[in-house]
Structures are given as structure tokens and as C-alpha cells.
Image 1 (cartoon, rainbow, N blue to C red):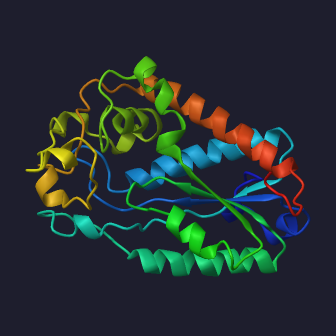
Image 2 (image 1 turned 90 degrees about the horizontal axis):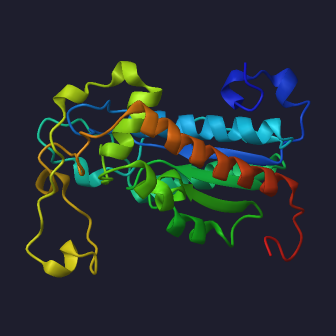
Length: 256
């Protein structure tokens, strides 16, 4: 049993501790090209969360990893041929977070990290809606944004979905579920608008049109070693933040 994982612990231990920070992972259940499992986002975010909480707990932080939310906002996957994408609406996600934040506040836990592993889960607007409703300090970590500055040192062609980055993590941390020989090249279909293709304008992408098999980015150069190198950076950066957050006193100027 890991002392920092709520689902593994018993009431005798949990009630004996004074928890300072909770980490709530968010994933999704959706296709990832042809070679990765539907639970990829869940496996990745749980691995990042578990390892970061372990680092923080071992450094003295009373941090607790909550169970992962396995269903994300996948409304733009619902027309992918043959796909089984389990989706909730953004308003549903807001209702869930609201209830969980209320439960934590009632029990005296006032620092919550939303650890997101799915690009479709746009949680920052939901945090803004909750900002005036709760005394719980909410912050967001999209794990896939933590270490983009080191991507050029690790990866040859980082993409976006089931790419070299995600495939490397899969090969490193859930290899039994990986079948890299099935992957296509993750080529993206451009829209008819240059402004969208260049990122000046954003849309909700229809995944049945943007990609042949839901991959964006070529996974061919992925290796387990690259996945481990990335994980080391993720765990160090997130784990050290959790230590700082746990030690910080909450006053009228927090977090400043």
C-alpha cells in the first residue's frame, strides 16, 4: 500500500493524517491511433500523478492522490468510424468538480491540484467559475505542458496525439498494452483555412476528418528510453511544486 494513494489506504491511516494537498487526475477513454490502448490518457496521468506524489510525500509533503476520472470531453470523437469514445459534456465535468471540491472543503482540505491528461478537458474555465464559490485553492497542471521545453532534447518529431511522445510513455510504462507495429504515420489533414492550419484561429476539431485513425504525429521514432527521460522531468517539476504547495501557508494574499 502506498500512503499517498487514497484508493489503496484504509480509514485508520487516512484519519490519522493531516492532509495538505489533494491531486485529482483527469483522463479520457478514446482511441489513440491503431497501436495504443483506449485508456492511454488514464494510464499516463496516473503514472505521472503517482510518481510525483511519491516524490513529494518522501520529501515530507502530506499529499494525497485521488482516483482518476476516466471519462473526458470527447464530443468531437463521436463520429470516428468504429470508435467507442466515452464522452461527457463540459457542464457535466463542471458539476463533478464542483461536488468534489465541496466535499474536500467540508473535510478541511483546501489545496487541490487538477492533474489533466486529456487535451479535450479544458479545465481552466471551470476553475474560473468555481473561483468565487469555494475557499479551496484550485490549480491546474496539464502534464503534457510541463516539459515541452525539453522535447527537442528528447524527441525527433513530437506531435500531439498517439505520437512519438505518448508512444514512448506507453512503451516505458504500459508496454503490455502497446502494439507499435500497427501504428499509422499520424498524418494530419489540413483544413481549407490557412489561419486555422497555422494556429491563428482555433476550432473544435472533428476527429473523423482531421486524422485517418485518430493519431496526430508520427510515432515511429518512439522508444521506452525516451519515455523514461520525459517522466523524470515531469516528476521532478510536478513533485517539487507539490512540496512547495504543501508547505505554503494560506492567508488573505495566497498564493502571492
